[in-house]
Image (cartoon, rainbow, N blue to C red; front, side, top):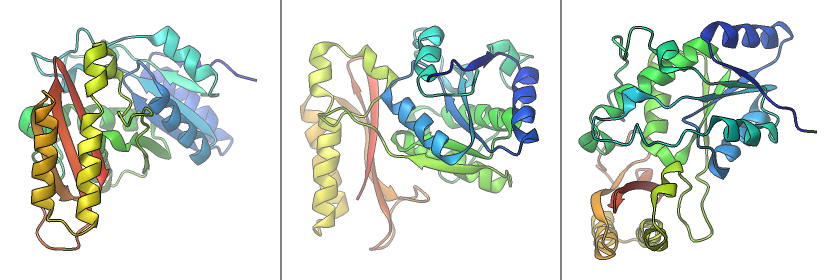
Length: 282
């Protein structure tokens, strides 16, 4: 039978609940989200339930990771509906802090900057983004101090940035990746898919299709640069404005230097007013 999670809004109340779990020797998993939950988020929660005895889901639309011309104000906020969805998944605690709770003196004056995997790609187009992500995730980790945290592979660069931050700061938290969940036509699930018009939604799977073709070609021996160029052209010809389509080292996200490196293909493109990202192993 489903149990409605306890919803807390302050660091004090969150820590009280986590202390109670720890008092009985239970492991705690954290799933950081910005809400507007969909099946992709639900898959993260299921993975958290497998990894720990108790699950905390944070819901916070973080202003520090949005640029001045991005969609912070219109980003969907659906807390009541999100809590209902989490009830069916037996989540124990929903942590839904206000902006003033997370940043009592305004936007973060102490910031966490992670170099290495944050270089290039998203940072070329959203230079503020990973400092905002690393800072808020660092705060969530300190506030909750979970045993593990679940991050989806759809935001692959973010996953690698968080993994590196935890390693560099010696945080005793296991970062567990979860595979990208997709629609039947290959489109990666994302809260921003709600912005797409019906016509745009029909075109959007081209990113996954192009990356899949490139990955197949590379595995068959094609030159990665040539395969990536074809993928970029395929996406562009459908009317999308490409930010990047690249092949990178799967662990460091550095440019490829030698044959046989673990490889990840990553893409970001605008479809109308909606920015879509995706990635695949190759």
